[in-house]
Length: 214
Length: 105
Image (cartoon, chains in turn purple, brown):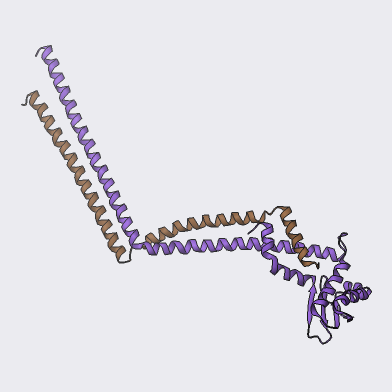
């Protein structure tokens, strides 16, 4: 065999091997495509099945979800409500502290004696009648004793002359009075604590609005 | 003894057979995969129609809802914290408002 024939033979072998390799590579590629398409089809089957099952189990799933989310919403709202209540309580505690300071004469701009007189006159005129017994704490009783005439004069403009007595037994209160008629059938609570409680129930929403929490 | 031409021809024939085998094998595997997926899907649907087999779905839904619930709670906690940060002037205004109402006019 001469060199030219040998060269031709080598080329033929190379071409054939290339052809063989290309053939196998194409087959490999096609096999991969087939498997990939199958995987996609499997995924589609699973998704479709999942969708159908979800439709079947829809109401139970919704119920399970609603139960958990509903509870969280409820607890969350409770948390907010507690935070609001704490804040409101801190306002009313601050007011109580200020009232205490006031009755002890700690606030110069405030004349607690005048406030006490107003509370007493208010209680008497609101009750109506002719005879009244006024109860107060020890400190306020002393002040009222000194100013009994002043009270009578102020009441006179509304109810005329009244018989006014002070109860010697002091009450346990921050300030203010408890007024009753002589028969004890009518009682008017006009203590500062009592008024604070009444105000709280009356204007709590307004306070919350002022605080900006509703 | 085969000539070089015959040997190369045989090589190509074998390669073609090998290629066909590979494709057939892949097709067979693909058919099996699809058949299995179909059978499983059908089985799950039959079980779901009977009410069985949805426990897992419910558990998954519950897990999803629990994560959502945790987010909701976190939002409310954040809001509650915000509520507590009332500016001093508003707090003072509220105290004054209550005080005005408590004290006699």
